[in-house]
Image 1 (cartoon, rainbow, N blue to C red):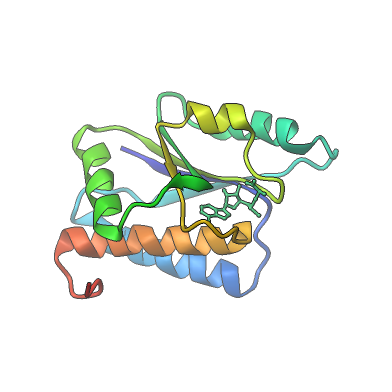
Image 2: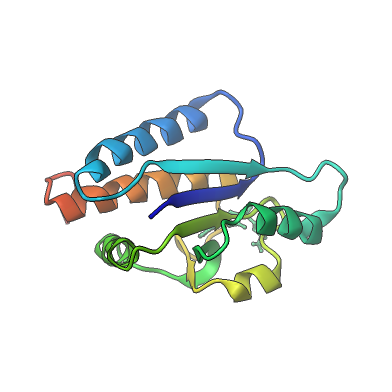
Length: 155
Ligand SMILES: C[S@@+](CC[C@H](N)C(=O)[O-])C[C@H]1O[C@@H](n2cnc3c(N)ncnc32)[C@H](O)[C@@H]1O
């Protein structure tokens, strides 16, 4: 199994980058004994102003072939953290690669969203994509702690 996050935009050095690195590092350490690989992050950027369609093309090229496509979108389903953890374990148990996609300022192209087998929402409000990256990294770590039975997730 491999897990990729494919995201529009470059994360510059700063608090968001530090948080993403910290949570992904924690996920790697907690997830190792659960059979999860470290997460690889791919960033794509369209510098020609081609909008969502150009971004969708760049994203599509970065999505590993055959991976289960999961997009982050405010219109998606709102799983609980244990539900997210269970689904993550399901991908692992089925030996499926997982690719989690985060859009840019204009969002994700409808065609790409429709191709996804799961659309996840972190609530109906729109969040900046850099914060969504932080939240996703935290949820991955939280999922690993839930599956490991560690006390981090107290709900
Ligand atoms: C600034 S938002 C784009 C909003 C855009 N107006 C749209 O219609 O999608 C950038 C990206 O962050 C992610 N995002 C923002 N809010 C989200 C939420 N509530 N749940 C899940 N993902 C979200 C999505 O991947 C989105 O494409």
